[in-house]
Length: 343
Image: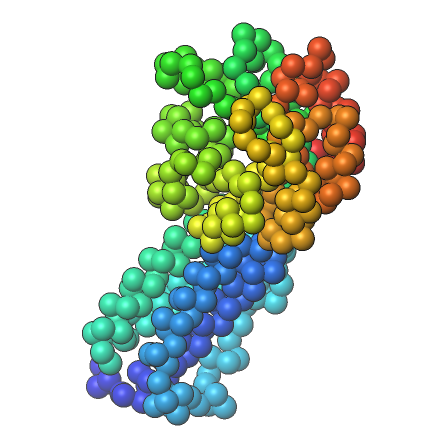
C-alpha cells in the first residue's frame, strides 16, 4: 500500500466538501421555495455554514478538475429524476455519503473535522426523515375542509357521514371526557379515518396521539412547545398550532409548525369568552403565512363566502357539520363551496 499523499487527501476533502454543500443547497431550495418550510430551510443553511470553515484555501488549491478521472464517470440514473421526491432523495444520499468520506479522511487532517462531520451526518439523517416523511403534510395541503369534532353520543356516526361526504381531515377534540373513554373514541375515529383514507389528528394531547398512532396533533397556545411535541412524535407527523394574531403566527412558524389555525374568525361556543380575531386576521394570513393555514371559529355555509373572499381556501368547521341534520350532505355542500372535492 502506498504512503498516504497529503495532496490526494486534500483533493478528496475538497471534492466531498463541494459535494456536500452543493447537495445541501439543492435540498434547501426546495425547502424554501417548494415547501415554504422555514425550519428545514434554516437547517440546510446551518449545515452548509458548519461545513464552510473546513473548506480552507489549501484544499481549494489542491483541486485538479482537468485531471480528475471521476469527471467522466456517470450512471444512467443520474441523467433523470422522476419527481421532486427522487431529486431530494438523491441529493440527501449524496450529502450523507460525502459527510461519511469527510468524517474518515478528515481524521487524517484534524480529528475535530472528523467529529464535526459525524455529527452533521446525523443531522442530515434527521432532516431526511422529516423531509421525505412529509407526505402527510403534502396531503394536508390538499385538504380544503377540516372537521374538528365535539363530544356527543353519535360521534362515530357523524364522523363517518362526513367522511362519506368527501371529508379528508379530522381532528378529535374532547377536553373533558375521562382518558379511557377518550382513548377508545380516538382509536375508533382513527380507524374510520384510515378506512376512508383521511388524515387524523388529536387536539392537545400528544400522549393520546401516540397511543392511537394519529397522523399528528393540534396544539393550543398553552400546550407543549412544538419542539417537544416533535421530539415525542417524530419527524414524520403533522403538528399544528392555534394562532389568534400575527405575533402568534410568527412564533408558530419559527418553532417549526406544519400548519396553523387562524381564528376564531367569529364568536363561537367552542372558544367561549374568546374575542374573535375577525376577517382582518384572515386577510393577514392570506398575505403573510408561508404555511398551510385553516380559518376557524364560527364558520358555516352562510358566512363561508366572506371568509373565502378574505383569502381563505382552507377552513376548519365544528358545529356546521357536527350538529347538521345530515353531516354527509353538509360536508359535500361545504366542499362544493370551497371549490373542490378532496380526493
